[in-house]
Length: 478
Image 1: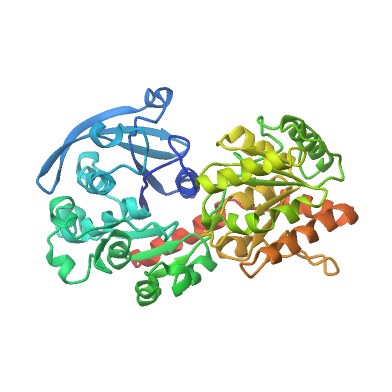
Image 2 (image 1 turned 60 degrees about the vertical axis):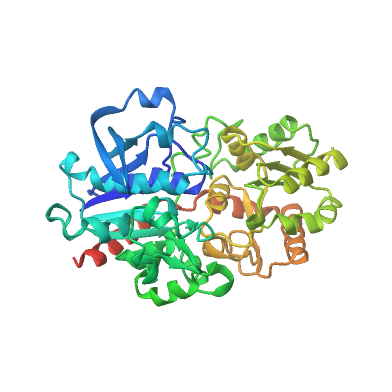
């Protein structure tokens, strides 16, 4: 099968979050199963010069977007059985940031049109195109409206993957013809319209042959009013083509037995060496504690979605116990200030690093005993899987991918791999944190079993890649 994977970011070239991780690992898993997989990504100026030097220039072309005729350079790179194509246009992609520019609608409309236009230049026709989130939502739309009837493009199927339904690509009606080059008749018909705006994600859901999202529970949740962000009715109408497939992680990239960023490597057979990482992490953070002091890690974006309002509500109660809290992340000012103030108020218990550092993140995964993720919603979540991989026991709210991957510990039955609570309630979270700390302090055999079991968990892409292949086959009628 020839699979075209279209993304706005892709590790290790450029990454801002989970989409970059998925785009960096799922195509490799598909290629390992014998498929011809080609990933398309913008050639951002933020991609390092060291990496850009390895790219092979193919040719340049021009892409028509409405009344514009824009330059398009095509570069190629091959690694791990995957072919990568980078779409070059410095006007759109030589920016200070990947997202959040005033003309994002135009930038990603250009990119979505370009990846379709260049296919004849590559002399390669995919069987299926898998695009991701609102930035590439116009790929199935443009394909249906402008490409499907051309002989070269006939019978290509499209799959649209929703990584986070909160971000939909909503814009005023005026962009439709002027920016996107799509006739206003498609707004009047309702195809491109939602609540009076142009909604790119909604159009992609309708236009695609199949729709996937990143966990089975999230696929159910987004069909409800609470989680659907106004698209729940559209998803219910298209539920026949909606599939929830759990994300995986790169098991080689996140492996405490080979990780060179942590203080001492360890694994299921040497769980005691995790204590070295805990000791060194506390030193690095300027905190004191011993083997019996619970260390709770938080590595996240500081936004409401991540449940930080729950943390805010009971932070003094959490810290009234003999625990240490190690926090890493950036985001909303109010949450940054909350953790800065907590560090000032409890300097012997709290470390707050208001930044992002991959090295420090890995050291927190390796050094903390517990990992707190009380998300309001979580499409999939990779951090809880990474934490388990490092023997760091997650404390999560039962939503989305957290519900699918973390199951409540039941001591008498010897089941579960973490700690969880269902209601979005700060005191429910506090109760579960204290429960986890109690098991950590007073039931060492059970805690060791949880650690080893987490480190032995298989969160690879192997089975999930098989599910994607099933979706592609169904879409193609194979």
